[in-house]
Amino acid sequence: MNLVDILFPKFCLGCRMKNYFLCPACLGKVRLVRQICVECEKPSVDGFTHIKCKRPWGLDGAVSIWEYEKVIRQSILKLKYNFAYEIADELAVYTVHYLKTNVHALPSNTILVPVPLYMRRERWRGFNQSERIGKIIAEKMGWNFSPEQVVRKSSTVPQVELRGKQRKMNLKDVFALNSSKKLNGASIVVFDDVMTTGTTLKEVGRVLKRGGAGEVWGLTLSR
Image (cartoon, rainbow, N blue to C red; front, side, top):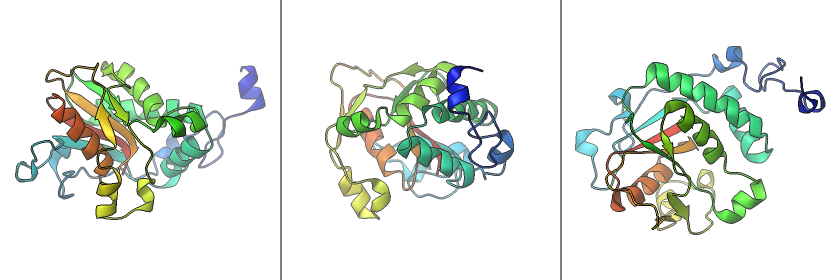
């Protein structure tokens, strides 16, 4: 046990078991989501976008893992607002295990692109949680990792505070492709922590496809 563990011992956010933020028992109590089409939100095998729902610059599919509840909700909130960086590492390990044993639709030769934060918010928080988790996922999945592929041009109201069409308008023209990062038909997985309506994933996906990406999927921890 190192000095950090002594001064700041880890306890499960659910049951207070030592040496975890998310112990396997508490994580096992969180419901797994049923995959849906990101456009119509109806059930879809492996998260593929239904053929009838396809859009020119739309996502080819999206995968989420857990319901936004219990220890998953606690961990994501603590990660965002209490700066507990090690939680990101545990979330990434659990995510990779799930992907390797349950998900077969995501492109294998791909680039993981985390949803970017506005630079002022990232400086205030000290890190981008989607970038930190995404980097570990990419390494363990054998994917390339490109955190600067897409940039966020301006700050916005948090999506959770908005409803319906407000969400789409809130993100209109907020994201842009990094002009120095060429895509040339590459397969992309856009990663974020939580999906509600999918507006953020779809907007980043639109920017990537218009910039030359081929197959583009969304991936989130929770929905």
